[in-house]
Image 1 (cartoon, rainbow, N blue to C red):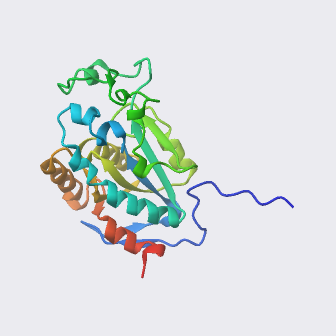
Image 2 (image 1 turned 60 degrees about the vertical axis):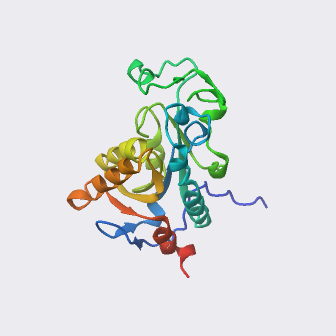
Length: 241
């Protein structure tokens, strides 16, 4: 007799119950059966020495501080059998999806599409565009390749979430004040409940990171709520002692 088909990655147990996450400015109710962990732009071009981020003058050590907490979180999330989604910012080989307004910003010594130490900068298929080895997607985990800062623009992200019946998005990645914030704002406008884990995000300036976190929590949680990886993992069924 043939073995029954395996459920797609990110298919939770039907018996999963909501859990409460300690968060600000309100406790966050995580519906396990309808939640996705979103890992935004943890790419070699942004996080490794010699990449595009460093060419822009960024201190990549600030961004790399997120790797360990995201790795621990991702391990716990996978163990619970829940959906993880990864994003990569980058462009077509022919640059047809790269607006001139984006190309000329940044005052970098190299620009998007130029050849760098890890191939053409922020071009899909190049080594620098790929996810860092420490957080590499597993088979079955969706990868959303996006041309902009937000994850919804010109992608099938919303379709993937709807097919998986996702209502809660847990946001991590870089940078807090740009791609993470843009995605969180867009998700909030579309009716998703959003939770950002502050130690799993970083900006190129600590002051920008803190300001972005404060913006989320104002007005009773205008875009969602904020927690941290330790409290979050402890609340997961597999993380409880």
